[in-house]
Image (cartoon, rainbow, N blue to C red):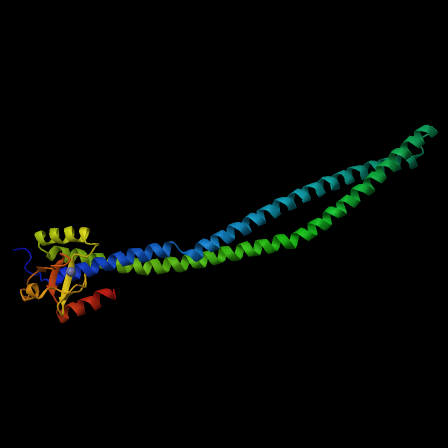
Length: 254
Ligand SMILES: [Zn+2]
């Protein structure tokens, strides 16, 4: 026989290990679905959207200001040229003189208007800057918090994953010890009975379905080295022993 090392408690071990594996997988999944992280990501997206909107608006104003500024420079150049002409003494006709003066005045007036407009825009820009900075800081703060939380979650997942790896290793060692036919039965029951195939009779009760085992059946359940069947829930039934408690507390703390 291949399974010389097998003892009935291996079935209990297998079941406890598999239950712990399920718990670990659930734990990893719930760590991955962190509500706090979702909240932070939503807050970050909002702040980022606000930041991008403000920045876009700011760039538009700055673009407009630059355009006005360029026009002012261009017109100033023109004014300078006309002034040079006026003082060069080359203009002889009074009509020409009046024309130049009128053109210059119009340019000066237009530049005054443009300068006023530019000042308005500069005030707007000054108002904008602290708003943009604030939003950027808020956005960066959320990003930083997200990073910290992700690192923390990652570290916690790693701890659980390491434990999961150990549990799986122990599971495959135990699987090798359990006789094939027994394993087939175990899997069958596990699938049918909500993931729990093995139960223990303690003080006349089935510890899984919590039903009292009828005396007539309980009387026949005496051999600790034998597998019985719970007459109430149909699971594989083993008689309770202190060894089971030890196994339980050992595997559950993994
Ligand atoms: Zn039962």
